[in-house]
Length: 65
Image 1 (cartoon, rainbow, N blue to C red):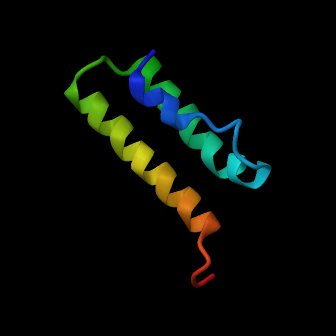
Image 2 (cartoon, rainbow, N blue to C red):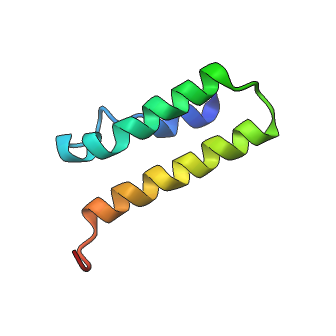
């Protein structure tokens, strides 16, 4: 298992955040399954993780809506 994949787990999140996080985990798994392991795949997974984190933060933000 790819080390980074642990950060795409979402079952521990509340339901409303699972709905946001889950598609990123699905896509990350698809990338791992279909793209050869190389530095560019690692970059793709890191950027996907950054996007997932930003989406979850946006959902819990107390700022502007």
